[in-house]
Amino acid sequence: MQKEFEDLWKIFPDNSLKGRTWHWWWWLFFFENPERPEYPRQLMILWGTRNCKKVRINDFLWLPAMIPKVQENHAEFESVVASWYCDGEKTHEPFILEKGATETDWGDGHGSIKMESERGSYTFHGKDADFTLKAENPNVGVDLRMVKWNDEMAKLIPTGRVFLGNLNMGYTMLKYRALLTHGKIRQGDETIDVKGRAYFQKVRISSITPSWYWATIQWDSGAYMQYFLLHAGIPMLRQQYSHNSNFDWGEKFIGKTLNFYDPNEKKEHQLKDVQVSKRYENDLPIFKVTAKDGDIKLMAEMATYGRCCWNITQPLIWPFWLGVFYNEYPARLIDFKYRNGSKKYGMEDMGKCYCNCEHTWGAV
Image 1 (cartoon, rainbow, N blue to C red):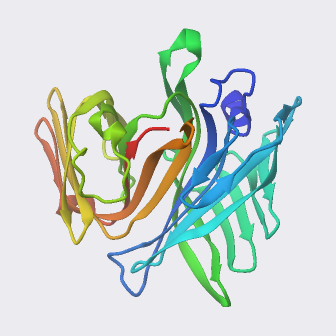
Image 2 (cartoon, one colour; image 1 turned 180 degrees about the vertical axis):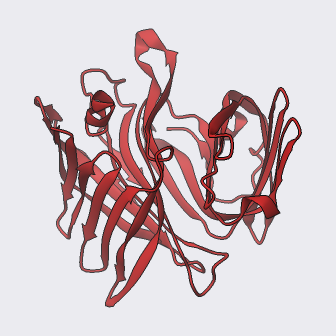
């Protein structure tokens, strides 16, 4: 576990794919919303760096000039900090979008990352399953503490996949599936107290980024679900913001996983026969996922109530830029069925939960 925790803070410039290696540290927060309990507030904030000369995020241009430096327990590089915030009715994006010099430190069971921009400071630090996050600029303030919720969800889980080992193509991931969180969020002169739960993942990907579907659900009961479906094909040619597209077909899945943790069994099931579909209402998707494996069958339907879309592009062949449309959707679970032999769970058995979905298209 010590190695995995130290890897959480590291970058690996010597083991990368030229122009195609991302590192990002990604926090997703779910907060109670007393005014509209069925529509929780959500906040996403990430630190991201890439070994390239130019990246554009919507209209925001990043030209990283610093060569990454890695010492024994310290790294220096440039990064972008990006964030969106959904207050339960409106999605504010970008909530934060800044670039600047960044450093990470690790050792003795502790780690930190800090980025300083011209306008603000963005940092999180801590030990295993115990973190503090602060983001501060003239428009926005975030001050949050994350601590253990239960032993199972506080485990630091490593995952990953190799596409072409001889070319260093693939991805690795470290994630905390659910931690408790509380603190404050400021917009302008207004500050509110927040509490709820958090999800974290540190991702390193060295590849032409394919498209994907992803979602996570955290139930108050301690149950947990997450799916991740990578796909190539026609949607990688899709280069527009609109949900309505002539390129929204022909998905060729290259990886399918769905994990469901049953707190009654105290066991996590990984299902590989996974299918996802979507329909739209008010220009927002409703995702339906089904999965089965042996005696286990699962179905979940998630209705989204907000959208953040970032078009992340790089130069391809002058003057053309190619990019991915990275869509994140605050969501609520509207239907759920689970069967494992004679054991059955429905919506009425599962109770309150938090949910977020992703869908990307294009390639970068």
